[in-house]
Length: 244
Image (cartoon, rainbow, N blue to C red; front, side, top):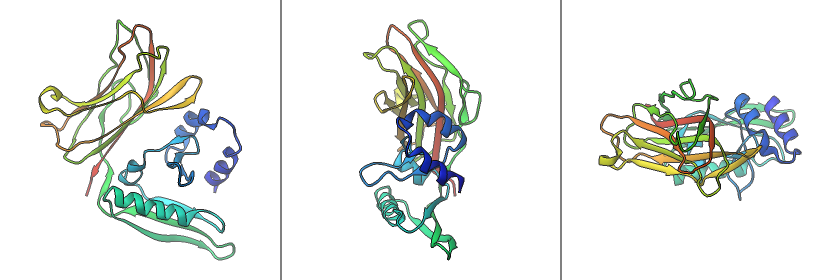
């Protein structure tokens, strides 16, 4: 399996977080187990959001061979499912009797999955793009990205790459309803950062929508309150909810 060989190879690379951009563009859904003390990572580069692993709705395939940690990982997924109140099921989809390799599939049984995101004007795509914006005192707010069809209980994960020259004034990733002043649906994060190389960082925001906005619409933007410059690129939205 190509992915398994690449994961083994990158394990010997120092500062592998710098490879996040390259690997995420080609293998956006490859997770690696990092042990009980850490969350799984995207291709051994940066930590993934545990809750979205199950709520994204895609089947999870585990490669198991003698001496590997498949059993420990399955136990971790069971604990995660209990913590997030999601039912999961597991089955074996491939067995190699010669060397006892197996492929184990894990899927959620509660209908969680990815939902339509809406429009992303600054990146020119439905989910992800690589457009670059520069925020400064004359333009402190990025273009707004609209998310449609938001319902009670939805879970939304937003990430954006930021390059900040102003340590005192970090960029603020904001997710809010169109009428947030009246309905109070507002999420903000400026500190959930992970280094991805060349002074760029990945900023992540997660929000559980308890009550849907009246029109089912939310918007995402980046706000820079400083006097210098903030560069932003690669905004990515994962809008998850009950799809069946």
